[in-house]
Image (cartoon, rainbow, N blue to C red; front, side, top):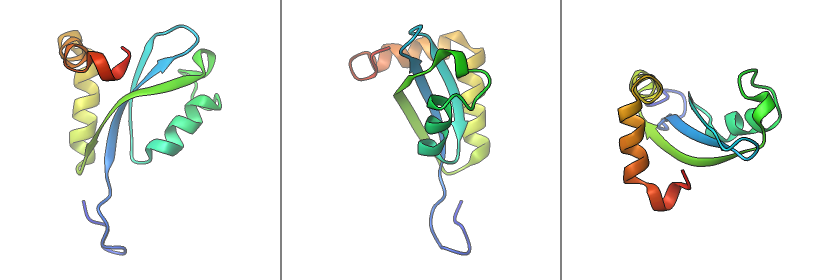
Length: 95
């Protein structure tokens, strides 16, 4: 989606974080990836505050927020989708 005020493309991100504490994954989506990761690492996100710090292991960018939310939901609810992603990016993701 192009911001009519700046004429810039505004992206939406689906991301996967890995907890350095318990090594489990967290999947989320946002329109500001750096800020959202900072919130996770600062303990400002209720669902992850006890699992910090995190490392970003993967992200995808979308022009549509609806597409990003759909992908996030797919990765969270369909274990096969996440398993296929893990298989595809084994070397680069440290999953």
